[in-house]
Image 1 (cartoon, rainbow, N blue to C red):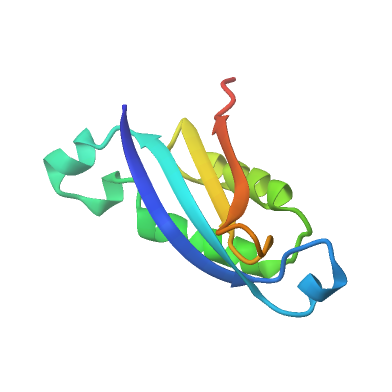
Image 2 (image 1 turned 180 degrees about the vertical axis):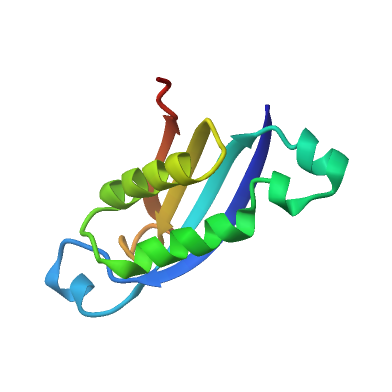
Length: 119
């Protein structure tokens, strides 16, 4: 199985548990890896047969900015389910970094791997 990835996708959104975090947007950076068989797209040179990272990126940005949540954990779980449901991938790994969360750290975050449920 091949991997399609998005690295350091930047999103400005409201996220956090503290009142000061809910008043202004913060930067989040997403690294996303999705398993995919790229052979059909490559053999036919056809974007319609590919796992389109541009569309996935747009969807991540759209969801991340639509309705604020407090926890990164909540956001990455929601995004994992969206990607597994809406795109042709059996597995997704999402890492989200929040660089302004802890002043003494370059960044903090959460990383999860989820597998599509089989019927």
